[in-house]
Every structure is written in structure tokens, then in C-alpha cells.
Length: 258
Length: 255
Image 1 (cartoon, rainbow over the protein chains, first blue to last red):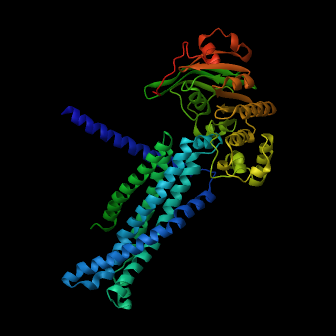
Image 2 (image 1 turned 135 degrees about the vertical axis):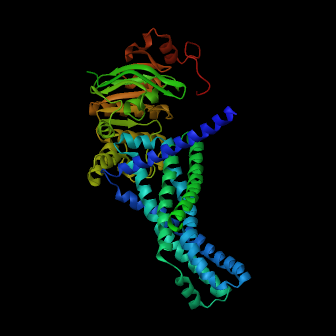
């Protein structure tokens, strides 16, 4: 029995240690941003990497999500003659939940993995040590621009995903389900409130920070050559995905719990 | 006063004690080479002196200033005294050659890019590389050329102390000799202090004023290069002659 409890205690302490290391890593990186030198060029480059190059994958995911949402809502709601709610369901689902979560999960797969692989390779090939010997703080030069870019870029991506997702629902609603286009658009706007969009954008900012943080953290601490970089990449994507879903619940609770 | 003074430095990874009470001095302008087999702690020693690793105990002084436990801002200033040539070159593969060489000047010292680029061209020329490679990426260069670029980067900011980690490993004998010659030339021209680690005795004899041998985390012998063949130390004799028999037993597994 005591061995069992000891095992649970060991796992729990390990979890606390890992959480502490992660928080410390984030705080050190953010603190590095308080003093010069600043690297706006690197932040801009990361914004392009994370945001612009993720547009196709986020756009495609969003349009199909909106389309399937309209279809499923229709087939479900038609059972109790509530087909008229399809447009409202699509827009609320996209802005509050699916837009931020789907976009964040796709970006975690694309960008989180790339960040972990890039920084991990730099770690195992001594490039991060080389930065230090060249009087450049790796946290300031490598980590902070990615954190800022993740934080700023995801809301913009999610806004695009929201619009494309609603458009996907509109396409299915008008062409397949024979809704009147102007009536569909009117229902889309009717129940949409500012908080629905804003909550999604706040979620997106948090998710963007998490994706960049997990990619940087796991890459920065990778060891053992190619295998270590591979593990770092996997850990970055898995941990970011879990944290996105966890924080999604917590933020939804914070915004909409009564 | 020694330029670098290492006293009682210990460093462990888990249960494995890699450095076990290192005592070592290096005078200003001297070229010290630390030899020893693979896994004896040579790279860890250099990383401790550079501040990339923090020893558990002991003292490391640069120009008489204690560096163990130094504040981050002071450490960044101290780094401006150092240049480092890494074993695998550690060039930034996202940047062209000239930016690799000029990196420390632009990012570390805030120099204007145009001026830093001119200095990079001068340093590349000093290591025998032409302007035509300046725009290439490191991955487009041979191993020997990458080593030269890494050497140019190490000397670009004209550091007071230059570290060379296995500078000739993985190079053919001719290219290894070219690199050794370049190291000698660059160090002399700068008047810098040089600390190299290697298991290549040809390289050690060529570039060292003084040699120290590291075994199981301790300095087991040190002296002038000319005395290495009559050291009377069984560890040194075995290592210098590359014999399998002797007091050094090669570990099959890393601990």
C-alpha cells in the first residue's frame, strides 16, 4: 500500500516539478523582453511563419468544419422541427468553440512541431550554446519572438477561421439545404453578440502562447540527437493539444459560467 | 595572475561525476591544450569555464574575477571576452555565412550590419575563404570550410580568450593541418589566450604551449609541450602512444 502511495506521490511531485520548470521558463523568457536588445525583425518573421503560412491549413479546416456543422445541425434539429436554428448554431459554435480550438490544434500540429524541431536541432548541434558565447541570450533571441508571435497571430487566424467556417455553413445551408441566403445571413447575425467573438479571440491568444511555449520549451530542453529532437516534437504537439483543451474549458467557464 | 584559474571544480550529471576537483591555470597569451580520451570531461570543463554549465563546487576566475554564480548581465559582458569554436562548428543554418561570422558583432555588440559585414569579409579572408561564399548557407559548405567559417566567427569580435573544442575532429589530415595553422596564426595575431581540447596528438603538439591531461575528471599531468614524451606519467604515455594496454581502461558505455 505504501509503495502504491509512494508511486502516486512520485508522479505528482514530478508533475509539480515539470509545471514549475515550464512556468519558470516562460517567466524568464518574458523577463528577457523587458530589457534591450529587442528583435522586432525576428518577431515579424515569426508572425509570417506562424500566421501567414498557417492560413491554408486553418482555412481548409474551418470551411469543412462549418460545412459539416450545418449539415449535422440540420439533420439533428429537423427531428424536432428546429431547422431554423442552423445558422445560429453554426455561428455560435464557430466563434465560441470550434474556430479557436480547431485552428489552435492545427497550428499546434504545424507550428508547435516546427518550433520544437528547429530549436531542438539547434540545441543538439550546440547552436544554442553558440548563441550564448556570442553574447546573445537564447531566451530573448529564440524564445521570446515566438511567444509574442504566437500570442498576436492566433487571434487573427481565428478571426479568419470564424469567417471561413461561417461561410462554409452558409454554402451548405443555401446550396444543399435550400435555406434562403438573406434569411440565413439574418439568422447568423441575429443572436451573435460581441462576447461570442471576443471570447474566441481571447482563447486564441492564450492558445497561441501555449503552442509557442510548448514548442520552445520542449525544443530547448531536447537531448540526445535526432531521437531527442523527435521526442521533443511529439511532446510539444501532445502537451500543447492537451493544454489547449484544458484551457478551453477553463476559459469557457470564466466567460460563460453563470 | 593567471588569465584563467580553475580551482577544485566538480560537476556531476546524475550519479556520474564528470569533473572531480579540477585544478588548472592558463597564463595570458598562452595556448593550453587539454587532452584526454572520449568522455573524460574535456567539453564539460570548457563549458564550465564558459559559463554554459554551472559546477557544483569550486572556483573559476577570469582575470581574477570569480565567474561561478555570476549574474546574468555580468555574464553577458564577460562573454565578450570569449570566442569559441565548437566541435561540430555549430553554425546557424538559417543564416548565410557572412551573417554567421558577423553575428556576435551585430546581435551581441549592436554593430551596424554594413560595418559588421565588412569585418566578416576580412575575417573570412583571414581563414582563407573568398567573398564568393559569403552568401552561401553553411549546409552548402564542406566540413573543412564550415570549420574555417566557425573559426572566422570565433575570432570576429577579437576576443581575449578563444576556446577550441576538438578543432580537427572529422577532418582529413591535410585539412586538419590547415586548421591547426590557422588557429596558430589567428591566436598569434590577436595575442589571445587559447584553450583547446582534443584527443588529436598531432594537433596538440602543433598548437600547444602547454598540455594538460584529463582522466576521470582530474588533471593527471600538465607541463610544457616539449616534455610530453618524457612525462614519466603512465596515463600520458599510454595516451600519447595510443596503446590499448595501460592504466586507462576505455568504458564501453556512457554512464
